[in-house]
Image (cartoon, rainbow, N blue to C red; front, side):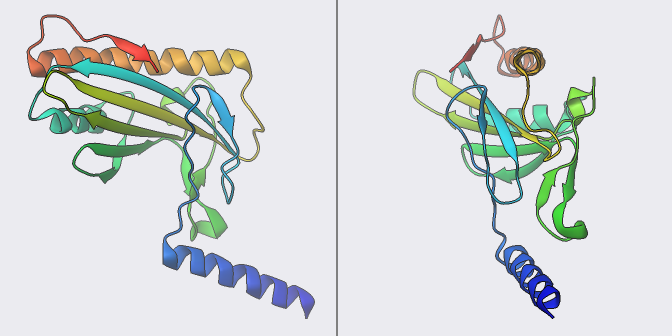
Length: 185
């Protein structure tokens, strides 16, 4: 009887979480640091970068087009506001037997494009320059307790390669003579 009540209680909490749309994803403000994300997430790592471009009225459309059509990413736009977007890509699955929240599924060796990543894009416009802040948050499955330093730096290299492609794409779309610089924040 106790097991049945415990299972019933757990199932009830899961249904309430699904119904309320609770989100357990947390962001960090320190580059490359681990984060215990609570709830169904185990740990995440965050890398943050910045690209400055001249004012451009269709910048959000250009950023969305890049991520949604990027061949090595297979991103999907999860949220879009006036100056903010969030993209998801990689191996995610529903928790609680396919009914709950999305949780990281795996880290396929040699397939960074399939790792569970959220990319947050924030654009801060001003008359002189638009500051684009990009946050890459990698979520680890519960089976992987942490990333060794070498893997963290290889993730940074993969992200920088992707951001160099973004920089070249921005230069082409905006009409800049050379791609804007990508810097860590």
